[in-house]
Amino acid sequence: MAFISKAAWLAVAVILCPAGWCATRTNDAEYLGGTVKSIQPKTAGALDLDDSSDLQFKFATSTYRLPYSQIRSFHFSEASKPRPRLGLVPLPKLPFKSREQVLDLSFKDGGGDLGTVSFRLTGNHRSSTEWILSQRIEKDKKAGEHAEQMKHPEAWWGDKYWKTSRNKAVWLESRPESASAVASSK
Image 1 (cartoon, rainbow, N blue to C red):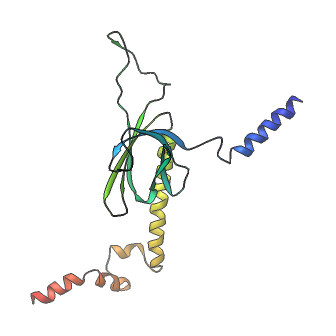
Image 2 (image 1 turned 60 degrees about the vertical axis):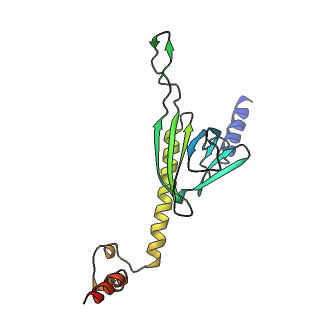
Image 3 (image 1 turned 90 degrees about the vertical axis):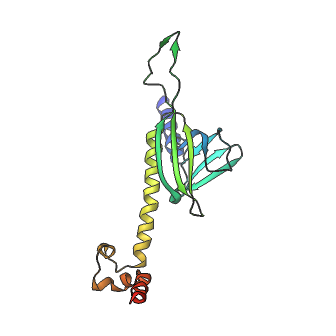
């Protein structure tokens, strides 16, 4: 009988884990500041990486979305906290205690302006967050490169470096102002 109940719990766990109940990519976070005016500094919320196209910061009843395609770079650093003391003696940092991390993102908004956001993450989720962000940003960059290649299917990677007879139309089109400048100087 005990085997049946263990098997039943195992079956429930296997069914619910793919649904996202066992592992979530949501981190407790605090918005520290940046160029985004729709979020007040020091706002507590959750940084959600489950969406494949947008990074989401969920706070109160609102959600701020930042498309991965607009993110230019990200950087993690350890949040500075005062070291605990016992009287005048500083205590050592405990290795098993979770440390707060600061995630700084730079992005280009829809208007082409450079923006930044900073989040304080709590818990031990830095490695998974860093991996997910790098994978999503890299995926968007590769999709953009692939779309560019599909515009010119006969293109070769060396066409942007060397002028040859096969790419003559491209390098002649890229210099119309210099050709008119040469013609006007004669």
